[in-house]
Amino acid sequence: MKIRLHQFLSKSGAFSSKSEVKRAIWGGEIMVNDSPVKDITYEFNPEKRVIKFRGDVLELPLNERYFLLNKPAGVICSRLNKHEASLGKRSVFERFNDPLDSRTFRSLVTVGRLDEGTTGLLIVTTDGNIVHTITNPNSRIGKSYRVRTTMEISEKQATSIRDGVTVETSDGGVSDSYTSRPAELVLEGSKVALVTIYEGKKRQIRRIFEAVGNNVVDLHRLSIGNMVLSDYGLDEGDFCEVELGEISSKILNDDDSS
Image (cartoon, rainbow, N blue to C red):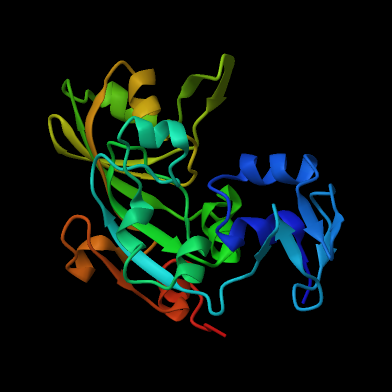
């Protein structure tokens, strides 16, 4: 079975982000059978090619693994770079370092990201196909959150979020804007709401509340599709392993796990 080079490298666990993968490829640091390959879409059979990065042989995990983590606050959903480590940052991947073999640990990726202050359900896996399927907006998989805000959530604010709001962004000096897809919102209290979104843009929940004149002070992901965190009895920071079939039936609405 063939796989694209950038997909192989992401699953190898040797890189902390897609941007690092791209830099390594474009910089000529990826060797396929001892020849540099700079084409990010290059396809090959990993059983018939030897892939090296800076002299080290890279491999795919032996078997795909799937974990549910109750993410605590104060950890980030990427592997630490030197700068982040120097600042004392912590990564969700540290939770998996001891229980797993090194090859599986290096291959772990998160299904989407929760920002440092957000808690709750996070899927961590070696399976890049599942990552793509769940995070693809066209899959229309709902992610539900409990949101606490600084001010009371007015009916006008709630209606705007349900309809979709214009969100202004500025990342790395680049400004942009987009209109959020309609969301489901149910008030639990004057400053507490249950919100379900069907896309996963960066800091989206926080930004849609900012767009209507409110601010989020506490954000907790409750579920992805029909996979509900509270069903698993995980304390904050704990994780459990699940099978692909369970993810397929609860998130992808597919009873055929084959």
